[in-house]
Amino acid sequence: MVRRSGKMQFLFWAFFFSVLLYLWILWIGVRTFLLHRGEIMQLPQQETALLFILYGLLILSTLSGTIVSIMIGNQSYIRRFGAMVILVFATIVASKGIFG
Image (cartoon, rainbow, N blue to C red; front, top):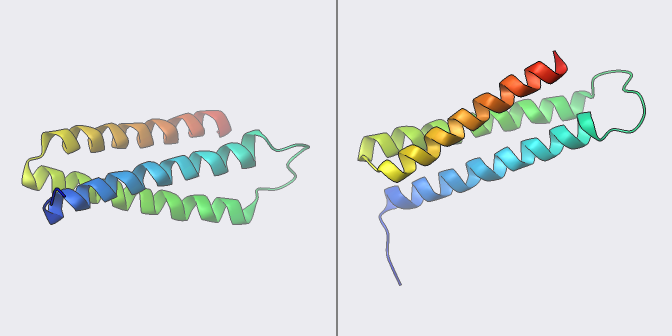
């Protein structure tokens, strides 16, 4: 069995949960706002609150992974977390463009 350092395990799990949270956010957003049947009379409060909480957790996990990977100098995780930050920013800009 290969034993990795605690820092590498933290980077792996932080990236894993970042991707998992991102996919969860996409699923909720698409299901709530794009695949909704009928006319939306008001903004769904529970889904909006859940999206804000998930975005907060996503930002925390992504930025913590970025900081740790920069501190230990791991280039592969720096690129992965950098791509994740760009993807999150692009999603926020796209959703702002779609929904105003």
